Structure formats: structure tokens, C-alpha cells
Length: 212
Image (cartoon, rainbow, N blue to C red; front, side):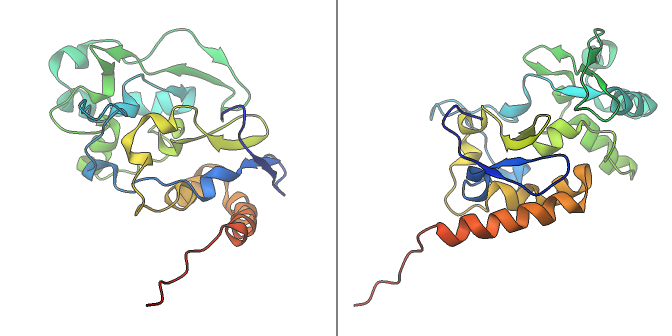
């Protein structure tokens, strides 16, 4: 969230504010079909937003470790043998268990990027293994470019850094992430956010057809 972000009231027992821009700013819905660029037009870096690793709840970490054998088959040997998580446990009441670590960096990015395909190895393992990644893949990653704190839902500060944010034909960030918000935080949140979305869109000027 930037210092000049417009925050609107939200009628929800946990989250009381929401950033208005998520209802109008765009996001490419199919990440895997997008050729990522970090705002430098001559620099392509696939899965750019995933390079830094992510905070992961201890419950999510433990469920990742339950799938260690599958992940070791997918990851390149050096990544499979490397540490997958940091060891320092952070206390954070915003996380489901109240505690989290981070996914480790390996080479130029998150350790779970180091395989022979695009995207997250956790997500890939769930598809190939036929299991549900919800509750295992870090919810922080699933929500990106949305983030949250103790009382607000907002756009991540680095959302504008990536080219997926600048496709005028893409859906809005909120519409892309609406189902994930409902899954992570419950349907009551998106019901409240739908109300704010309608209020925001009612104030957005609409383009009129050209009459010749």
C-alpha cells in the first residue's frame, strides 16, 4: 500500500478497511500464459514476483513437508537437497497459526521455483499428484498482489513493478482474486467487498460510444 492509497470502510468483523484501487486496477488472470517483465521493457524474468520467497504459516510449512517426496522428484537436485525454509520462527497473529517462517532462496529465487517448468513446484506437485494445494501453498502467494494486515486488505507495494499489472484488457485485481479471498478468509469477506466494489464502480466514469 502506498502512502497516498485511498482506503475505504469495510463492514467486516476482522477487516475494517479496503484499498479502493483493487476494484479498478488490472491483473492478468492466467499467470502461466504471461511473459513476465519487471517494468524494464528489455528484461524478461519469468515468475518475477516469486523470486524473493514468501512468508509461510507453520501449518502450511508442515503440510509442504508431508509432500517432500513428490517435491524432491520435481525440484532440481541442488534445490531438493537445499533447505526449503528459514529456521527463525516469527510470531505474527495475522497468520492462521500465529507463527510463520519464510521459504528459502536458492540461486536467483525462491527454492520452489527451481524445477524444469514455470511457476511454483508446490502448485505443480498438487496438479501432478491430484491433491488440493489449498492449505499447503502459502496463502500469501495465493493472494498476491493483494496483502493484508491486522485490519485492512490492500494492494502489495510491489504490485506496480510487474507487467501483469498493465494489461488494459485484463480483469480487475479484485475479480481475479475474489475466490481466493473467500477461500482464505471466508465468504463474509467477499460479500462485504462486493458492496464496496459496487460503490467504487458506480463512481468510475464510463466510456461513451462514439457517434458518427
